Amino acid sequence: MRIAMVSEHASPLACITGEDAGGQNVHVAELAVALARRGHEVVVYTRRAEVSTPDRVPFAEGVHVEHLRAGPAAPVGKDLLPPHMPEFGRELRRAWSRWRPDVVHAHFWMSGMAAIPATEALDIPLLQTFHALGAVKRRFQGAADTSPPERCDVERAVARASAMVVATSQEERIELLTWGIRPERVAVVPCGVDIERFSPFGPSAPRGEHARVLSLGRLVPRKGVDTVIRAMPMVPEAELIVAGGPHPPDLEADPEVGRLRVVAERLGVDDRVRFLGCVDHADVPPLIRSADVAVNVPWYEPFGISTLESMACGVPVIASRVGGHKDTVLPGETGALLPPRRPGRLAHTLRRLLADPTARELFAEASRERAEELYSWPEVARATEECYRTVTSSTIPRPRDPRGHTVVSAVGTAIAGGED
Image 1: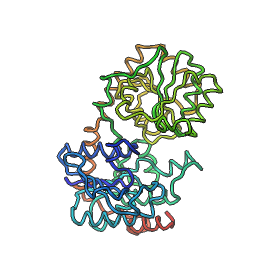
Image 2: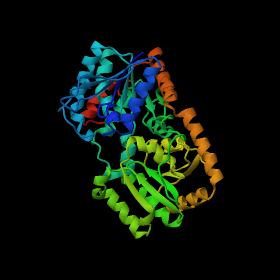
Image 3: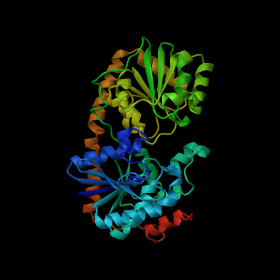
């Protein structure tokens, strides 16, 4: 099968250098490679962000990355990219007129926005993975949400235009169904984890005598790291390692690190809270293996990949009951799920788990087994391929919005700022 993936701002090539490599970059890269290993031909289309970047770059056997011109050949913040998506879409149509894919899989809302006119014109089925929904993000982040104002309207139009929406969690699927998307058009395929790289087997980072609690992820307020710090006075036997944020030279100037340091100092636990900053790719699994418990308690989280990475390393996890955590973590079997923003509850659960090595060992074994069974990239690729085969082998009527317009028209209206 010929598979076109569209990832307008998140190039899989960023995973090679490690620069600007977020969850979507890794997801697209790993999924493309896993699909190629199943015998498919995959091309990933992303926006050219540097003048010197070649048009076509081999990424892995069976996978190429193509850079399309859309806006300046320079870095542009993703929130500033929507005006360039029509040009990106025209370039997609030209590319697919030369190399016609059997299926197109768009990642993130702007990729879908660009891909819809081309897929409709060429009659190619489109699948959409949002990775995060603007409506949910705005609900939880309010004024802190920097997304373009048209995002929510465009997302709904893109969802209606897609032959299938591939959600990454059951919670996301439920949200999509409230938009009026028919159940048969919404599948759930989770994010994956490299179970060979993230495994219990291998070196562990050095550690001291204290029990080690690890918080791994981006350093932004919604991640709830302050909740973990506020729990530490009630867990005197443990140290907290905070991994994430800027590289160490820039750590002290980071406003979120500064805020969290003040919280730790006021609570008298600054001697037991250590900020590592950005950890090199190769050093993440050893760091996870060195922890007794991994804690990830955001109050908004679409999926929660660091939780899955800890599970794959055989480390018990305490996570907040939000987003993808509700799918990945089995309370009482692989770890614990708690309400967000509850440091007292977190401290109580941490004390119990740290005092019970048998429970930690059982949770660790079950976590690893669950990661292997459900979240390996070969399994995620198999489930994704099943979605592709559904839309390519079925006679699915072209989606139309409720007023009878084609969905391309609906997306165009949303982009222009019209009603949803």
